[in-house]
Length: 148
Image 1 (cartoon, helix red, strand yellow):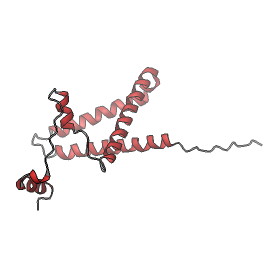
Image 2 (cartoon, rainbow, N blue to C red):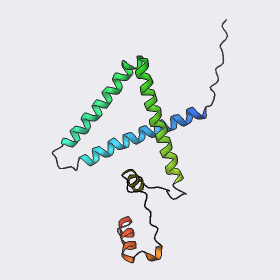
Image 3 (tube, rainbow, N blue to C red):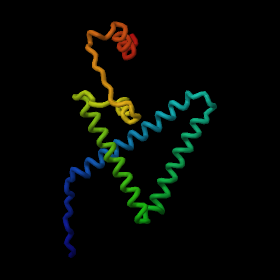
Image 4 (cartoon, one colour):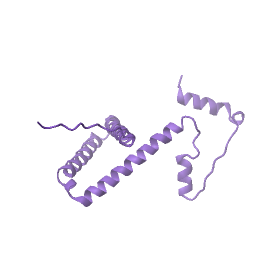
C-alpha cells in the first residue's frame, strides 16, 4: 500500500502581493480598453478609431498567443519577457503605493514640475496664501468640481 505524502501549501507574502498586483494591473488594462472604446464611439471619424483599437487589441492578443504557444520555449525570449513583465509589475506596485501614500501626504513633485525639470526650465513652485487667491479663482475651482 502506497503512503501518500502530505503536501502543505506554505503562505508566501511575496507571491500573494505579486498575485494582487498582477490582478490589479489586468483590471486596469481592461478598464483602459473599455474606456478607449467608449471614447472612440464619440469621435467623428466614421468609426476608424474604433477599428484601429480593435486591430491593436487583436495584434496584442496574437502576440500573446504566439508567445505562450511557441516563443516561451526559447530561453532567451522567455527571460526578456519575464524581466519586462517584472518591471511592469514593480512599476505598477510602486504607483499603487504612491497613490495610497498621497492620501495623507501632499505630493512633493508634480508631473508638470518633472516635465519642466526635464526640459531644462528647472523646478518652480510658488506657494500662495489662501487669502491671496482671488474670490473668482476659488469659485472657478468649486464650479469645476461641483458645477452646481
